[in-house]
Image (cartoon, rainbow over all chains, first blue to last red; front, side, top):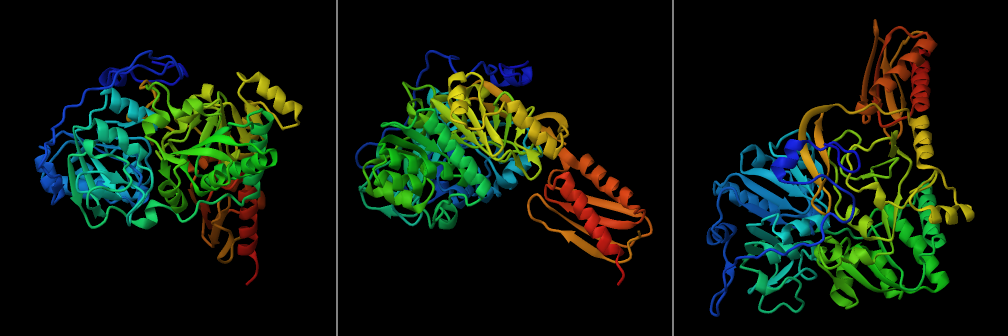
Amino acid sequence: MLNAIGREIPLDILKRLKKEPFQGAYGYAEKSLRKEVAFNIVWPGTGKLVNSISEALVKAKFKDGMSISFHHHLRNGDYVLNMVLEEIARMGFRDITVLASGIFECHEPLLAHIQNGVVSGIHTNYMVGPVARAVSAGILDKPVIMRSHGGRDRAIESGELKIDIAFIAAPTADIYGNIDGTEGPSACGSLGYAFSDAKYAGKVIALTDNLVSYPVSRISIDQTCVDYVIKVDSIGDRAGIVSGTTRITRDPVGLKIAERAARVIETGGYLQDGFSFQTGAGSLSLAVASFVREKMREKKIIGSFGLGGITELFVDMLQEGLFRTLFDTQCFDLKSVESLRNNSRHQEISSSMYSNPFTKGAVVNNLDVVILGATEIDTDFNVNVTTGSDGRIMGGSGGHCDAAAGSKLTIVVTNLMRARMPVVVERVTTVNTPGENIGVLVTEYGIAVNPANEDLKKKLSDNRLPVLDIKELKRIAYNICGEPENLKSKGNTIAVVEYRDGTIIDVIPQFE
Amino acid sequence: MKIMKEAMAGSLESSDCLIMVKPSEKLEIEIESIVQKRYGKQIRAAIEETLDEMGITSGYYKVQDKGAIDYCLRARVQTVTRRGCEEQ
């Protein structure tokens, strides 16, 4: 059947997953509930240290068919997912579902576990590399469930997504399970995506390469959540965890797009005291932030908060007094880790507080402006950051649709084309963020404003910003690139894209 | 015009293409493209048309495309063909 944005969702998938089709960004539910969690009480005199992953699995009564969760703060440097699965495979377990908030190039060993029947299902928010390519080629019988960051927390906290064991990659942990992400050889900063896992999993196992005596001096995930602590040689490769610096684009076209986006924010009247702002860590998003910083300095504006995955640029803006505080679910570089450790106005928050739609209000609801990217955007402003132009998975919503839904103004910044592929298209390959939540599209060829935002369109035109109809942008792109041929579906579904509220916004077929 | 020797034109930069040519009895065109699924037919048509306009009926062409648009493809085909036709 067709959902509210005209995407075909197979009925058998809705039935099998007991899901509803997407019905619009808001109002699908009025009430929600938090699940009850059964757990073992830890009485005085009982320790939590265990010697190995296998010992922890035995103590946790691990068995075939269970679901295990991982968080992605160690990004492409993560050792934990591979270490745990290797042990699970060695012990002969089968039919395991992996609930990982992100899957990267480094997780290639997962492929062998899928082929050997150890792993039979994957749920994730973001997926790149060999696993994403193999999934796109149909390696799994069960479709992968792709969620947004907020959607993952909603699913966990409501009990819809059951975690049997959560594995926490702990840069520093004490022997009683208090965890800090900002210290240790594998320090990654915020552990925001692991909070729901730690609170709602049946069992919680922390792996650390920096075991300290009780207690750690800065507690992120606390001892009341953790069953077992394991000391390992290393939880990750430093080079893949954080970058030394995150870069602003030097491409003149990119800078032009960024400068225009900053003018859209200013002209739209959003740059006032109390301004709140989120960007991604991409070089184009950072360039927008850099132009916004200039404008905030000029106008002597003090913003309320910066949000997101946090980068050096936002840390500098905090230190300069341009924001009162930063909310941080994930640190992208070393300077952010250091800031989170040392600056009390740089606050670690859970991804649920950041973006879960089914709470008494997530931080995205307080956002004025968010800058987002797009692999494709269609003439209804629906955005794809999940699949590439060849139809293969190469990303995922992450916080994309969460921030877009919460923010007063959502700006997508992108080149009109990338190596012959038009970014503005008639119909995106996959929708992860509905067009109703996109306010403005900024490209080097012009700015398109969502027709629902007539006032802003007028303001931008009056201030001589180059406003064009989004269909005109598409026409320009097609004139230069030619009209792309349609991808041919093989008919089977390799992934299901859940909107943040749990409805199905799209499915991804296997393409030829 | 006839391809007399091996020649090369273009680059592997994004939005460009690298074309190699060598003498062959018949006309053969091998194309690898990062946008094959979306523009494969248009890429082949642009190359064949350009060769036809130049009167080329033989030669082995190997095209490695990194998302070049048609006028870039045409220009690279013309250049590599002229290079391949020049006297040693």
